[in-house]
Image (cartoon, rainbow, N blue to C red; front, side):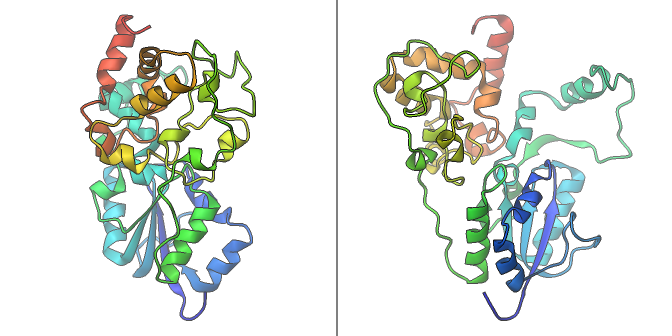
Length: 313
């Protein structure tokens, strides 16, 4: 990386801040990036309030308020290339679970019902009001490069930035997390779904074979599979595979149920029912994107109603 430095803006919308921290997690490779990049607008590093003209803009977080929408539009207007950085920016992220409830329900729960903030006053002037929906960045502005992950893995951050600086396509596949998992798929004898609090899975074998829900087979590899390779089942933080996103009738729960039923002695119907009961966990990162939320197979409000009525237990 050499020559004239690339001008970089970053902005932080509705998220936890972990994605900005992830940029620092490049460790020594950040020095290679800084040789070719000058950081201009960055909430955690600079005190610049306006948006300078830039070559690359990194947008983290989903759009949840009017302030978020304004910031995204300003970034698009001033940056030649926009990166949707992190799962919140790409798919809406964990905030997407809010779509299962109305805005009023959420505000009541946070302010009127929370034991630490019991009040009749809900702020509406000091901070931007919540939008009706949680919105991924590309539903408001055009996006040039998507880099999911919670947060994105340093390997893919460096590769994504390097590809833009060097003006080449990024080197990334459409493989699932399973492709990098070292666990062996076997036909197991599990007859019920298990959790790590009541069963310690064997480190040699696939979680699905042992009766543990793992979303690795339905999740895009943008992480190098550290979780399943270190004893933790995949929770899908990089979002669904392209196959699931692009096929209208393919779904996270149906894909996992099919594979798990083949690798264990658990009936597909049992797996589907379990994943519907825990839908806000299984779809935690991606339910806000229309590619998931608009699927005819995605019935989050029905599943919640069934649980509340005791018909899906």
